[in-house]
Length: 148
Image (tube, rainbow, N blue to C red; front, side, top):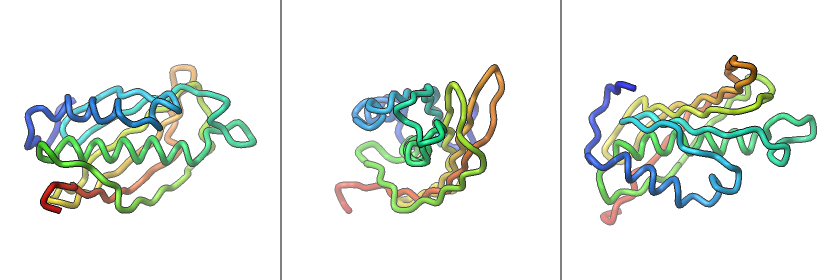
């Protein structure tokens, strides 16, 4: 994956990986980090009946959770060492029922800033070698530093 962004911290990949490992919610739902590049993160999630709503589609709360993390870590990859990431707003569009054997959330930074970042997320449902876009997100994220 080539990126249009240059990370401020050369250790961005290990920072993202370590922070992801510390997210209990990602462990709880069974998500895994698939790809990390400057301004771009992908998270995978296998289908699990315990994560569905009444019609056995992936619950929209789980969809928003993995897209939020993908967007957040995409922004985090461009933040300086020592910064933490915090979501301050997001909007989700549910485009189709999230039915698949596996899901892939992709987060991409659209506008990096010194303290505020805008990212877009996409959620794909994968089944039988095919992939279908089922949800999108626009997120605003903040770099939290010791200076405020």
